Image 1: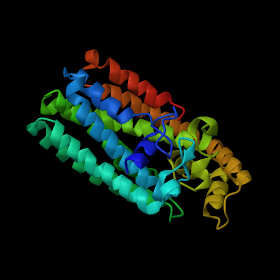
Image 2: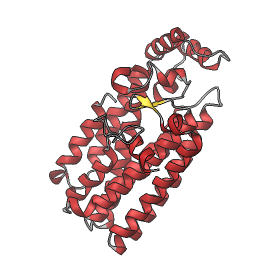
Image 3: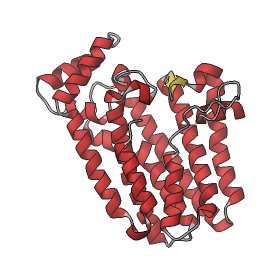
Image 4: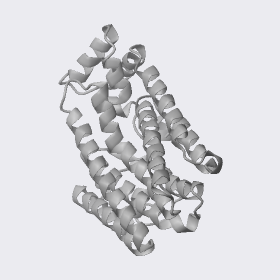
Length: 305
C-alpha cells in the first residue's frame, strides 16, 4: 500500500526505488501553508493540515484515474495499470482515511474539529462534482452553467478548503477563514479552466498525457462546452464529432481542437480564467502578507502541466 501511494505521488518507481522522477505540483498543500502565513501563523503549525489536504487530493486522483480509465499520470502508467483496479481503489481509500487521521492526531483539538468538518464537507462536494462530470460523458450536450457548477464542486471546493484550514491553523477569525475559502474557490476555478486548456493544447512531453487527451475521451471541458454553445458551422461539426459512435482517431482529435478554437472555445476559457484570477486576488483578506499566495495564483494561471 505504501509503495503504491509513493509511486502515485511520484516519489519512487513501482519497486519502491527513488528515481528522481517529477512529483506532483502539491499546489493545494502549498495553499494551506501560504494561507497560514498570510494570516499570521507559522508554517510548522499548518504542516499537518497541508499533509492532510495532499493525502485527500491523492485519493481523488487515484479514483479519478480508475473512473476515467486514465492510462498515464505524470508520464508513466497509472496505479491501476500497475497493480490493478482493486488495489488502486483501496490505496485511494487508505489515503482518504489517513487524511483525517493526520488532522485528528496532529492538530490542536479545536482546530482539528473545525478542519475535519470542512474537509468532510469538501469531500462530499467534490464527489458530487465528480459524479456530475462522469454523467456529462453520457450526454450529447452540456450547458455552460452546468459545467461551471460541476467545476465549483469538483475542483474549487477542495482548494477553498485548503486555504480555509490554513487560516484555521493560524487561529484566524471566522470572517478571515471564510475569505480564505472564497479565495481558494476562485483560484480553484482558475486551475480547472487552465487544466481544460492544457487538456486540449498541452504539450504531451510536459503533461505526460496523449495529445488532445480530453478530446480523445470526448470530455465536456470549458473550451468544448463554450465552443458548442457558440452556434455556427464549427460548433455543429464539433458536436457531430463528439456524438459520433466511432472511436476518435488522431486526425479527429486534431480536427476537434481546431474546431474548438475556431468556435471561440479557447478564448472563452482564457477569459474565464483571467476573470476568476482577478476575483481570487480581490478576495484575499490580507494582501500585504499574502506574497506566497499571490505567487501561487500566478503558478495556477500560467502553468503548462
